[in-house]
Image 1 (cartoon, helix red, strand yellow):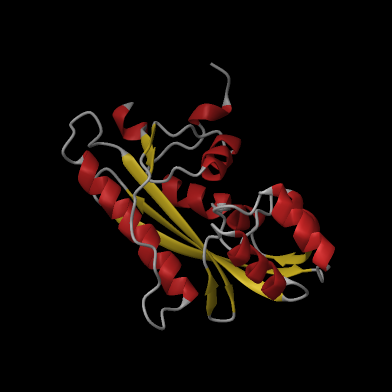
Image 2 (cartoon, rainbow, N blue to C red):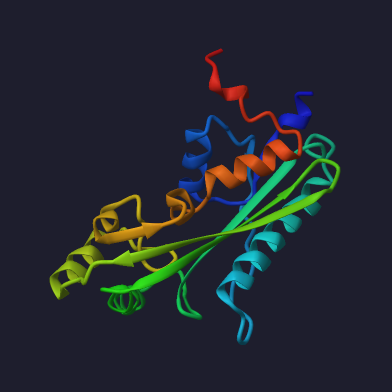
Length: 206
């Protein structure tokens, strides 16, 4: 029974770890998968989130199948994509990338798609795509300059993290907030429960 309750998170994202802990779930192991995340030609943002989350989960599952200590575990993966229309905004690594993204998001709505993929111990694969519509206020040049100086944009899809300073940019949000952070908790826990994972284990002390 204890083995069946081990959850492997195929991600190194501290935000996803924090979200799971917020829901009372402590991943037994983090297994970030180093995959090429380049969108395919004409690939829709939803399709990209679906494909990458599945690829990450399957890659991690294949690795643990070789290890008896982990082969009865649940594997969870997620991938978050930010898009304006069909234009996908990559994870920003350079200041110029972040600046371009923030100017594009300023004063308009965009979509955040998170693909969540769960592989149960018996190999059953479940997947869900969650989408949230976010509208930013009109950002001044000084807003963008100061946000870039904060460094909070680094490595984040769309060049912002809603759980930080950029939360003050959000004029309107329709859908799941935790989806924008990186892992839609309601849908994720429903998937886990549907495959027999006891999400309540960590809710009580001791």
